[in-house]
Length: 246
Image (spheres, rainbow, N blue to C red):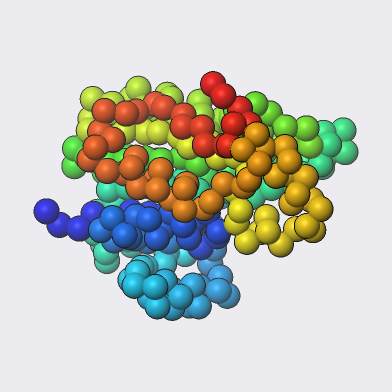
């Protein structure tokens, strides 16, 4: 069987990198999506090469439907058919709702929710045609339970779960699974760069009294991308150290 291609949006961030590495270790040809002109692209690829992972990069703003179409077309033409899609791209623009600006709402909904349509719409029909595919959507514990100061983020990540369940029903008889992962607080470089007292406050709020490891999310993605996960679809997998159980 030829090597399967996996596309990870937002693939060069802390969580994205862990997902890329996990899928590469499982034998997938990994393509990490990044923004056009990403200054860290070359260094990121070199770092993965040094770790033994030969990966590809694909530039596209996931808020741009036509740019996503062009990215998918280029990947399939130059690298191969996309068998796994991980919708991981996301941003935060936190503010309490009465003071939230329209631009902050729009930016988060566009990047965290509209992107699911923009990317998946070009890939899912190809998966159906080939009779095999894995779509993995990265949501959040705050999309499951909500979080003060994050009405935009919580709304987008909750929308991700509805998208997952509906699309799973459409594709479940076509050989394509659609699942969501809802991580809690993960110890990415971005989180660990916060003030120590803030990080400690986050840890204190987690029943397990630790942050999640990016590798734990990567491993869960690797399972969902595997043949053994072929009977699971429409699921939300909570991985949050006990912050929310449902």
